[in-house]
Length: 87
Image (cartoon, rainbow, N blue to C red; front, side):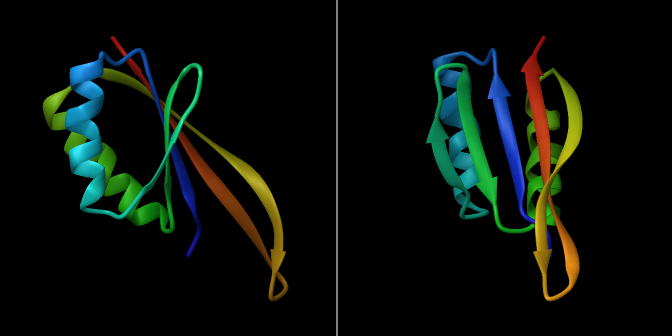
């Protein structure tokens, strides 16, 4: 199980509220930044499901990257980062 972060950038206030309602289903932690909203998920699978639900409602550009979190029980841990920029 790998954690994930979704960055919402360029979304309007109403669009962010609709996205946050969908994020409640997945129990995501919400952090407001100066550039937009960051959502933290415990599992990358939940983050992928959330992104696919958003794709049905909004048009955006999606980029994925990873960050190294170190080792846990001798295995590498990664943070999956999805950057969603409204078109």
